[in-house]
Picture 1 (cartoon, helix red, strand yellow):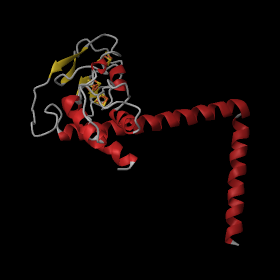
Picture 2: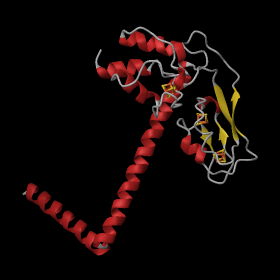
Picture 3: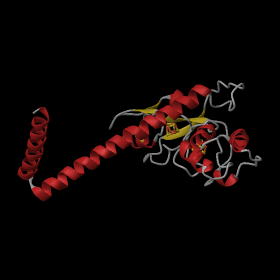
Picture 4: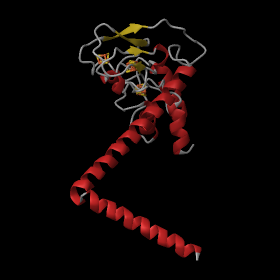
Amino acid sequence: MDRNAKITAIDDWLPQTQCTQCTFPRCHDYAVAVADGNADINQCPPGGDITIRGIAAVLGKIGKPLNPKFGITAPKKIALIDESTCIGCVMCIKACPTDAIMGAAKLMHSVIEQDCTGCELCLEPCPVDCIEMIDQDQTSDYSWRWPDYSPQATAQARNKTNAKILRDKKRSNQKSSEKKLRELRKEKGSDQIKGDIAAVMARMKTKQEQKQE
Ligand code: SF4
Ligand code: SF4
Ligand code: SF4
């Protein structure tokens, strides 16, 4: 099995909560580390024994118990926001890996139940401690590998996390281009930048004309 196929097969055994308990920023990064031999197979508490057995089979290894240093396997919970206390600071939205929190600045926020993986990453940044984790009405599917996480939920969490990473990357690239432009303006002045752009455009036009001749 080549490296990419191995990463995909391992990632498929991760419940996609994106909780970071394995010490990696997202499930896929843990899958990469395990495939490359940089992390052990027993670091995912939400996946527990099922995940360990699955990864061991992919790698042709013998299973081992979950390393308690990374946490313990527990039933999935979901976040609930006390909307009367929420100050609308949006810190939880930034922290949520799966875009499971709705709200806008200075407005109350709420959790979209079916998108919440129970990762708990929104708890710590909340300045007024108005988020708590509650038991979810389980619609357990015992035909699936983890009763608490359905195939649809794991696929959705993976897709939503990928979409958020892409969006954040675009924003950060845009910010860095804007910063570069601001610095260039300071260094050269707007008139010189306009002059440089005009010169580039003129060069391109000349090249085009030469091609057409
Ligand atoms: S579910 Fe949490 S602990 Fe398991 S791989 Fe994903 S981020 Fe790591
Ligand atoms: S709402 Fe909170 S617990 Fe639920 S997925 Fe988002 S960050 Fe995790
Ligand atoms: S972090 Fe807390 S206070 Fe801020 S928007 Fe989220 S729930 Fe409301």
